[in-house]
Amino acid sequence: MELLIVCGGGASSSFIAMNVQKEGIARGLDITVDAISETELEDYAEGRAAILAGPHLRYIEDSLREVADEYGVPFDFIADSDYATMNGKNILDQALAMANK
Image 1 (tube, rainbow, N blue to C red):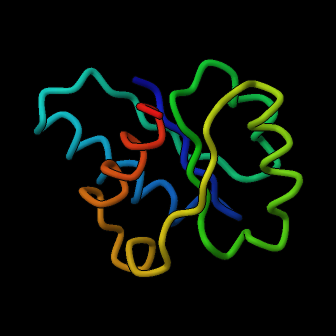
Image 2: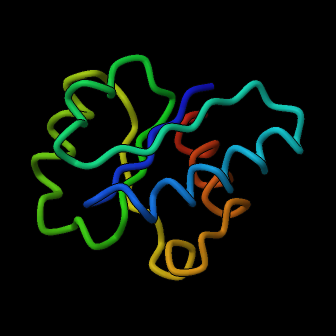
Image 3: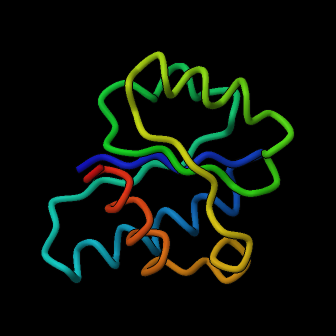
């Protein structure tokens, strides 16, 4: 399973991606989680099980969703509280629910 975390500059998303990957490995999942800035989304969206964006990017939701839709990848925003605490467990649960729809 390949997940994508989208952030503005990519710094906080890198920590979130690490936490989500650790949680996935602990659950025995074959998982890869990449962190990118929003400007790179077009280059990395294809083939992902889910795309999750930081809540601070809601102002560009239409353009993010357009790219995700173009590649047929489920898209959503990480909950404010999970983003702030970098909660890998909850974010992975969210991604798994999205990928299994």
